[in-house]
Image 1 (cartoon, rainbow, N blue to C red):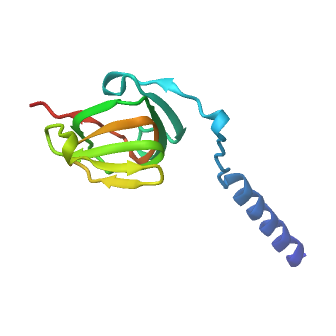
Image 2 (image 1 turned 90 degrees about the vertical axis):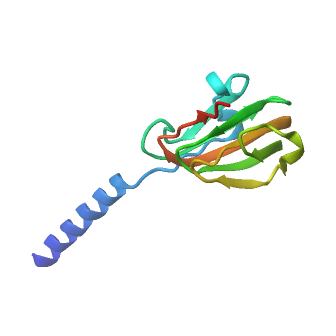
Length: 144
C-alpha cells in the first residue's frame, strides 16, 4: 500500500512538473511577423520574437533596416544587446553623429551597449539586427 501511495505521489508530481515546464519558442525565417516601426524607428520594420519589450522580463526583437537608415543619438535605460544578422551596422558613441567615428559591425558581430551610454547607428545595406535584453525597454533621444 505504501509503495502504491509513493508511486501515485511521484506520478502526480511528474505530471505537475510536465505541465509547468515551458515550451520552446520556435520561429523560422518565414514565420517572422514584421510590423512598421514608429517614432524613432520609422522606416524600420520590427518583429517581436519572444517576451514583450514594454513589460518587465526578458525579450528578443529583430529590426530590419533599409540601406541608409539612421538612429540619431540616443540612450537606453537598460543594456542593449545587439547581434547583426545581415548587412552592416555602423555604431558611434556620443551626442553628435560623426560617420568617421563609427565602428563597422558586419553580419555576425555583437555589441552590448551599457545603460545610459549615448550612441547612434546607421545601416549599410539592408541590415537585420537582433536585440535582446530585460524589459521594459526604453529609448530616449539626446537633444542638443
